[in-house]
Image 1: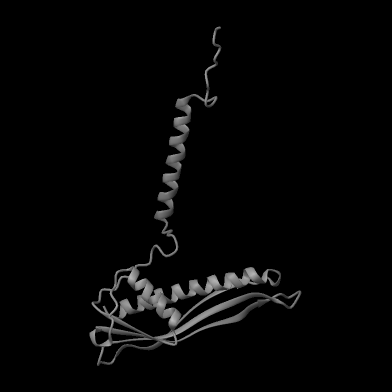
Image 2: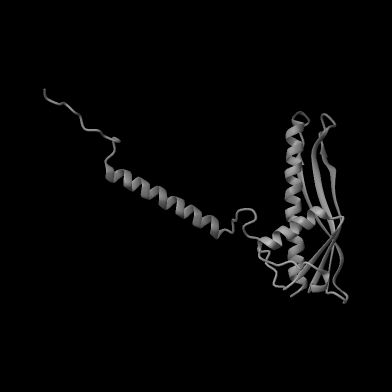
Amino acid sequence: MPCNFSPITLSSKPIKSTMIDTIKQLSLTLLLALALSACGFHLRGSQQSTEVDIAGLFLRSTAADRVGAAVKSQLENAGTALSPSLAKAEYILSLSREAIRRSVLSVSANTGKVDEYQLELSVNMSIAKPGQDELVAAETIRVARGYAFDEDAILGKAAEEKLLEDELLRQAAAQIIRRLRAAIR
């Protein structure tokens, strides 16, 4: 009994044409990546260098626990060792009076209901050397973000507000670290 098998074809295009299309797509992707990096585009958080060149930093956070935790996390991720005690510290970073406020940013002219809110995080900071005057006297760090509010999606907006608070904490921590780096140079 004779076998009648037909050859299997993967596509109607010849293999050489498929390879050229693949090379074109790869070239376009590389060109796009190069263009994005040349214009200064960075993924969020990837451009922040939080490295601080000091032997020991003591972090004191009084009524600023969440910002203190964010600063500590960013410093440790950058390889900066925090001093376990005040006696061994080279610098003291003091954080206090952390507050998150929500205020109305805009109101609908038609309904009179809130369209947008603004979240603002503020925290006081100071930097000193042990037994000496402050390098940076008490100063307030403020970061703010606005967001659209929809009364019909209240659960989703509550989750969005929590995410924005976390982002504000990261931004404030990065700003504090930049200020610390500038003060100890």
